[in-house]
Image (cartoon, rainbow, N blue to C red):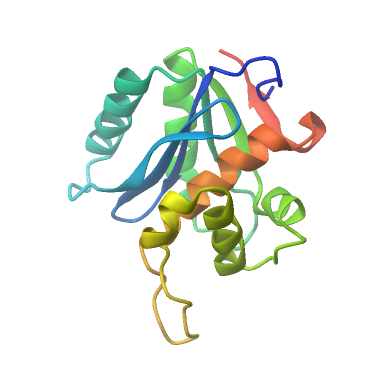
Length: 173
């Protein structure tokens, strides 16, 4: 279950895993961005990825852990495995795990646009401190900028915090 309006000082850690690490955002309440970034994990060993996530859990002591609900048939098996691993680990650390679908993100940001770039632009209007991290609009032949994972993680967190509870999945530990 996502945090309620009255829980203003509760911290949320949102993570978007990548093939080289993860994008993350830490929020306090619904609207105070504490930290954000993209972390590189060079080791293929998943223990290193979990250890890096643990460092953020230890540092910020979040109550909620938010990540993507990977469910589409076209989602890569590796993405689903990593997301499941991280969600299970966070639950083992006694965090409340909330998973958010990309469709729920699109519904939340529908007035701003539904592409990742349009959603990231909307996020920079709410959090202007991220404007310098905003990647250029991607051309069809370009690879996605790794900074977009920061915006994806924040979009998952905002969707979890701002959406009605029936749109989300939660696993209380």
